[in-house]
Image 1 (cartoon, rainbow, N blue to C red):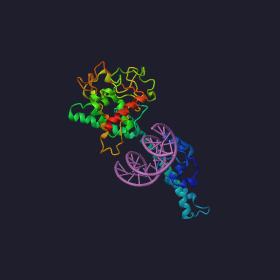
Image 2: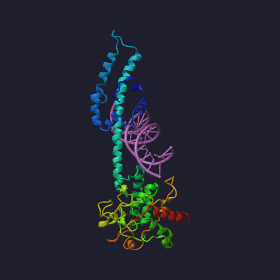
Image 3: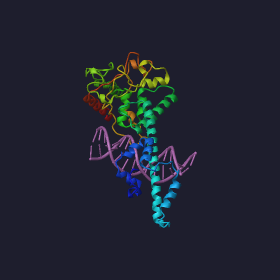
Image 4: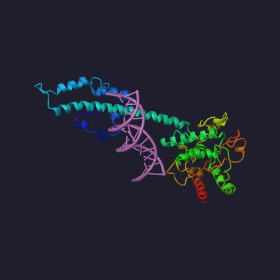
Length: 337
DNA sequence: TAGGCCATCTGGTCCT
DNA sequence: AGGACCAGATGGCCTA
């Protein structure tokens, strides 16, 4: 915009000017690189480039001399003022653009920090990024959950941990977190309906080895699984155990690495358990009701509720879409009853 | 198409 | 004076 002649468009308010031009104007693109932008200003803006306050007096004096008419008499006040304001406008404009660049950098820094935060909260996916607000909420919940562990001095059950993590999160985020924590809806059903719910179990509702979906007959991560959103499932075990003791090999990394790591999980639709959204995060902590995923009985609950035996795995619940819907219906029935 | 999320611009305020 | 920080406004992109 500095390349524009200083005509009326320069005098008009900045906000109006900005609306006149496309967002990614040349200047704006250049502003992404402030250094090159400065150079551009030198090249294109003639005498625009200067450090703030520098030479301005000289130039304004010059301007004032210019403002004398042929007879050496000063021009009328109004005219002169207009000329001076033109310089000022130029300078203000330049400073505004510098401020914009700083603000952009600042926000980029903030976003970088948020990205770093995303990597340490219990749900990280490069392709399915948590929103800023959800990242902050999840981080807060995570800190709170961990501090509760410290305060109480013992491990809560998985359900409580997940409940705490998901407080106040939106449904998609809750789904994502649940997926990352590798809960499964069947555990939920078992916990909700107790033994009576066992009839709802499908042949593979009991634990089966990961990487393979019996119904699909294909390795997990293929077929109907949403592979486009390759997620790095957070290993609950790692966060948990690293907090207390050394991690087992299976729990060493929260991230999905390589073919031996857990497959991507289809988190679309599986955990659509919430009946309503809480409008007031501070008051409503009902989300826990929707995550009554009781840690599976059996091998998981031996030395620790969450400790996995060396050769056992968390179940990866790989559902077909319609199957997920069926489960969701069942869950809804549970809630409504 | 509405709504959510985001990047950017902008002007105000506070601090150094 | 100038920079950092903040919040409002705006428009683009994406998804349900």
